[in-house]
Image 1 (spheres, rainbow, N blue to C red):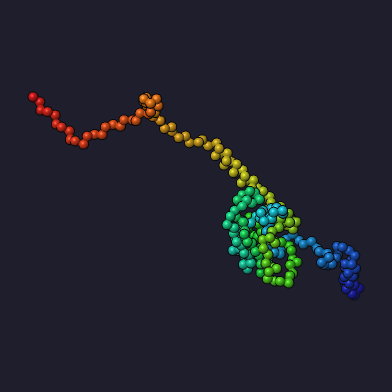
Image 2 (cartoon, rainbow, N blue to C red):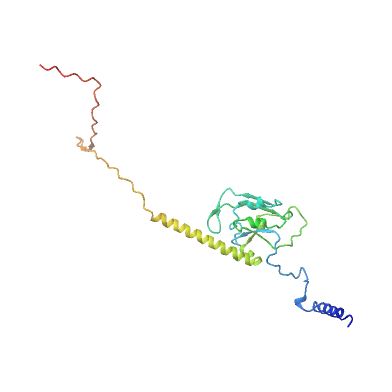
Length: 236
């Protein structure tokens, strides 16, 4: 029949149109901002710093201020100042920490290079995209207090990557602890070097008329005479 293909196509279109009003599987829009769709796990926006403890984010930052991300950042939007002292991290190891850690999100291009070069898994990509502000200079310059977020938040937005990172870090920490215990045991089992005893010579005690004991002064050998030896007398 002439035009049957056209009619079938219009029927499919009409079916999808009607279904988009009542079928949840066909709903392609949401009432934003009241409703928000769940972002895919691989979505990324701007970086954030990972801390081990939510109650003490500044004291448990994974960042040790190595400044690799600052050097590798293409737009140079990361600024780090290294601390002069050290403090224990989440594992108790003495580490440096960032005294200043700023990211200018107005310049950041979300390339994720800072995440890829970080050897401590201290910086990850966030999913926050609602960053509109009336001040483009100071409001978009985030400091370390604004960038620090707990590891539990990392598990919420990137669960697969977070589990992989935690498993690897746990294995590394366990290996380091076992190595330290083995070194301590080997040091304790090693024989201590013995020092030879020095013989002490006791000085004789001589009686004193006053009733007190006095130690005799050791007699030194007589010094050789400086005079030339006399020749023996001639034989008779």
